[in-house]
Structures are given as structure tokens and as C-alpha cells.
Amino acid sequence: MICRLEKVVKRFQRQEVIKGIDLEITRGHRVALVGSNGAGKTTLIRCLLGEYKCQGGISVDGLDPRMHRREVLSKVGFVPQLPPPLRMPVGQLVSFAAGVCDVEPQRIEMVAERLGLDLGRFRRHPFVKLSGGQKQKLLISIALGRDTELLVLDEPAANLDPEARRIFFELLAERRDTAAMLISSHRLDEVAALVNRVIELDRGVVVLDDRVADLADLTSRLGCRLVLTRVDDAFGRAIRSWGFRTSDGGRTWEGVVPGPDRLRFLGMLSRYAALLASIGMDELPQPVPAEVRCA
Image (tube, rainbow, N blue to C red):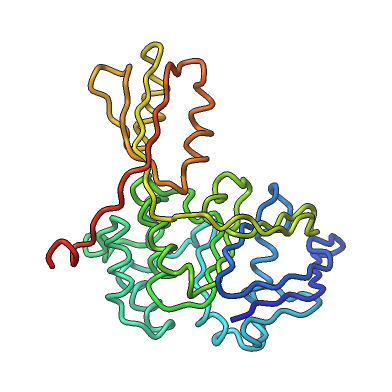
């Protein structure tokens, strides 16, 4: 599977947003597409998906995404940055997406269950009425609930709770050898541990295209123990959002951090550096699969 962009240019009226980009992405590439807001990341993704007309050439497995939209989208799993304002009930949306993708709805439902989203509970709810995290989990379930050769993920984990992020990383790990991935973010530390290639855009131009060490274990977990110099309510609210717990009123906190999230976690801790008396982080053993335990 090869995704190729050749001298791609996109203009909105007189403003040139994408300026002659050449890229090639193949199976096994996990690409971080980074850059500040306005760098052109989302516009490039929309060109790749055939949503925008553009100059130059784009092909996905040899197919033009504008001329062969359905065939291309059947090969692509897409999670947008902003959920669409759909009023369709959740159950109907799952059935529709499964029909378009030619998969059983149960596959989408199984991914949603792993992410902690009970679709049976929300089957009659309009999609637009779900919370931000619930929408994100459903969109990820639709993208990953089928066999795709290219995953295009635009800020995919922004609204996920820590446990859902851990499961999301596991789901990506299951596709690491069978699909190409393009993961967009405005911050490299959000996605650094997921990828083996970094592409940076600045004002519509590729300013960096670099391979990085492919050392990521997307299923790793870190046991973490934090000791504070004093109790702080703001820190307590921040660390609880990561699933951490305290047993002494807020001086000591313990929890588990997904390995790919370690940079993001440390970035959060850096805001409270003056409060931290000690930080302990240790790699946890991988859980034994159920089929092994039962053997």
C-alpha cells in the first residue's frame, strides 16, 4: 500500500495554504504530521481524502481520491479532529458506517466496548448529543472496526480519558505492521512515542521529514508514584484525570501511565514542578493473555 503526493498545491481564493508538497507513505510507516495551528495539516488531510480539489497528484494504492472516492475511503480509516454535527441516532450511524465499509456492525461494537463505550446504552441517542469523549470513542471504533490499509488520525486521542487512551494505543499496536498511519497533532510530544517518522509543516511547506528510532512499545505501561511537598487542590484535579489515587489526603499519588503517553504525562507534571518531592516510574510487566492463562 502506497500513498503518494506529488507537488500538491491548495489555494483558498488567493491564499496558498499547501505549497507544492511531495510525500510518500507506505505500509509500516507511522507518521506524525506536526505543526502549529494554521500550518496546513488538516487541509493536507482533506486533500488526501478527496474532500478538496487541489493541484498536483494524489494517489492511494494507485487510485485518485477524487475520481475513486468510494474505493479510496474503503481503504482508509479516518478520525477527524472535530466530530461532525450528526443528528443521526448512534445505532443508525453504526449500521450506516458498517454498510458503507462492508463490515459487520458487531466489529465496530467490539472496538467501542474495548474503549469503554456501551453502544447499547446510547443506541437511540443522537450522535450530536454525546459527550466529546463518547463521540471520539465512536469515531475511533468506526475507523478501527474494519480492515484498512491507511489510518488517518487528526488529533485522535484529544478527548479520551487515560484508560481509553491506553486501549487506543493497544488498538494501534495491533495494526502497526499491516497499515500505514498518518497521525496529526500540533504537539510532537502528544504522538512522539507512537511513530517512526516525523513530518513537520510550516505555512504549507514540509520543513522536516525525518525517520526516528522505532522503539515504541504501544502496549507498555508505567507504574508511577508521586510525592508532593504539600497538598495542592489544582494538582489533585489534574492527576485524578489520569486515574491516579491518593491514600493520605493528597501528599502521595499512585497510578498507571500508558507507555506512549509518558512524554505527555511528564509535560503535565512539569507545570507542578515546584510541588514535586519525588517521582518514581517503573515499567510494569505485560499482562498474560487470557488464552495463555487458561491453557
